[in-house]
Amino acid sequence: MFASIASLILGPVLGLTIFAFIFRIVLTWYPQVNLNRLPFNLIAWPTEPLLVPLRQIVPPLGGVDITPIIWVAILTLMREILLGQQGLITMMH
Image (cartoon, rainbow, N blue to C red):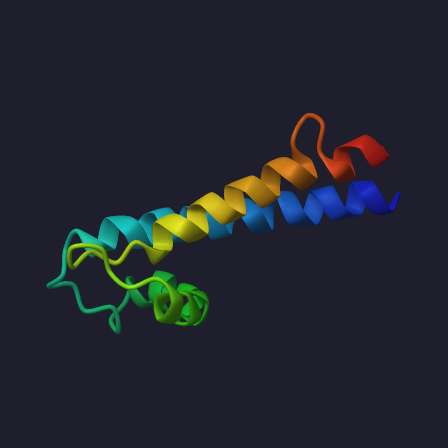
């Protein structure tokens, strides 16, 4: 029962978070975009608290902020480990 509820909640949450970071990557291609205005702030505000600490550890590479890419990788790995075909939560069913 717990595994079903967890997968029903975690799947969409991780999926939306990954989508938000991918959209954030696309926004980095357009530096003139004001991230404090709608609709861009709907992506910037939820992702920024996760990006700030990682930016302190990983500096920009060649002037490019790669922290959203790192978060996509981390979240995709977490999703696969937990909810993938042989994921921990999937195997609990």
